[in-house]
Image (cartoon, rainbow, N blue to C red; front, side):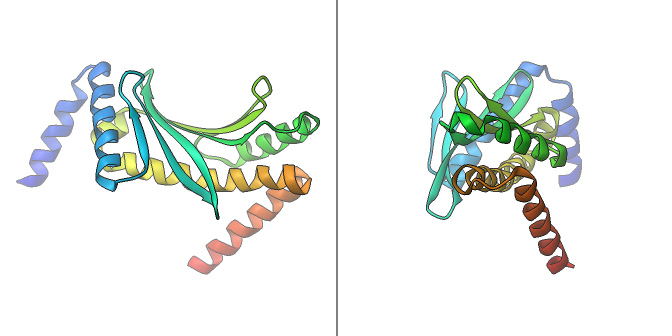
Length: 180
């Protein structure tokens, strides 16, 4: 009986307008943050949540989550105020990441001297499956950690983008071997 209820609820949600989809996902997002008791701020007027999570040991990053333009957005700055002379290498590293990523995009913003990682999801999935919001946040955070480390390594250690990506791929392979 419970399965039938959830099925009918999903069918009903499919019939709702896109504005209602945005409203549903926004409410679920706020509820998730309240239930998890994560350090965050809700900006109701602008319809976004700002949260602080650890991206590396003793390093915090500001994460932004919002519903806009029929999509659920996850956004984090991986690097701010980068040295201008590293712009070419930053673009190369971002391109390497974008070639590897299944979800999201790494962008270099020259105007603001920043690097950001964004993940967007059509609203229909989190409307139909509320637990998908949590999974998107987890996925975004995990990838953000890799992006953050890679760009920090480029700026601080002046390591070549190809070497950074090669090391990251090697680390992924080693982790996947350990899981099998």
